[in-house]
Length: 326
Image (cartoon, rainbow, N blue to C red; front, side, top):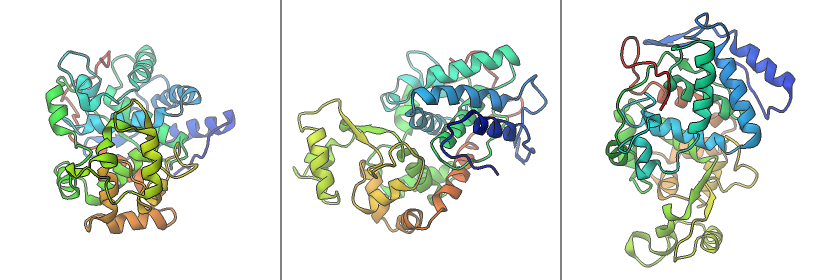
């Protein structure tokens, strides 16, 4: 299908929008490509594209925000937009979701779609489509999004805090967790790398690796020495609100590409789990392939995102289509 790179002209934008309008529906269960075709006075995916495109021009970090939002949503109760619900005990207020943002963008998309086709497009589908658009705008390869999800009724901060994987989760445990969602070890490596090829990580998330790894009073020995020095300069032992780029490959920090895998091959993983997948026997062959085999990440990441988007979905008469995503 179409491949979009560094979209910067109205001609290219129009070409991609027109491509969206000619999708042929293919189904997976009750999800299908082009679920909304012919159900609205305008093309739903085109509307979402235009709104995300405009937002991206002002804030290119939206790519990381939306990737994180989709993963954090799907990881708890499935891809049901439960992360969007407001409330003192909702997923949104869980400490593990403190770095999730992009809610206002989803609101803007929902408001426009409610004007055009009230009660039709679910918030869960908006997250999935908006994330795909952001990936393409960040020079990732186009992938087809299956739609037809419905929104959940329930959102729990405690479920999010207990269910989201921690930054020091062992590789075997992460693979088992992803397996419980119907995802493979390769999917885990692709989604972790895709999510960390853009965006930033705050010092508090990896300070122990710099100064007191596993309570040794020393740094994590697997970290590249030059990277360690740079990180310590940014993240003092006393703590700070500073951050570093999740992908340490020069020129790659805002692109959805395989730079992340090349960085962890050099000992430049930021989080403990980033570096562990490079050395663990379960995942290292996949990391090597994604780092060095040209095009593998580009062609496989979209498939992993599609499979993530199938986790725990509500379809048919299940759930609801919220008129307000919050």
